[in-house]
Image 1: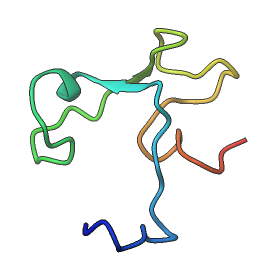
Image 2 (image 1 turned 90 degrees about the vertical axis):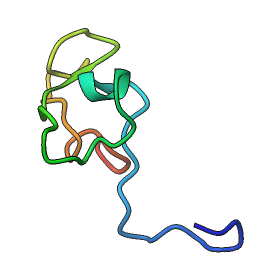
Image 3 (image 1 turned 90 degrees about the horizontal axis):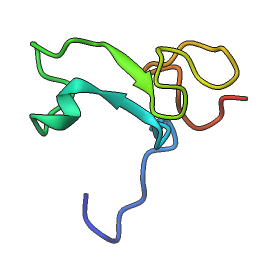
Length: 64
């Protein structure tokens, strides 16, 4: 993305506390071999502090 371009309004920005093991050994989280296992760095579990599931589509801007 060029500095003058704006982000898509449909782009969901993930929570900064969302983690997955691919973050630690590869740069692309969307490759075909990704595990799809996510956890919250606040709870160290697969759910957030409010008991909701942690995931790439769940933990993003706009979630209450």
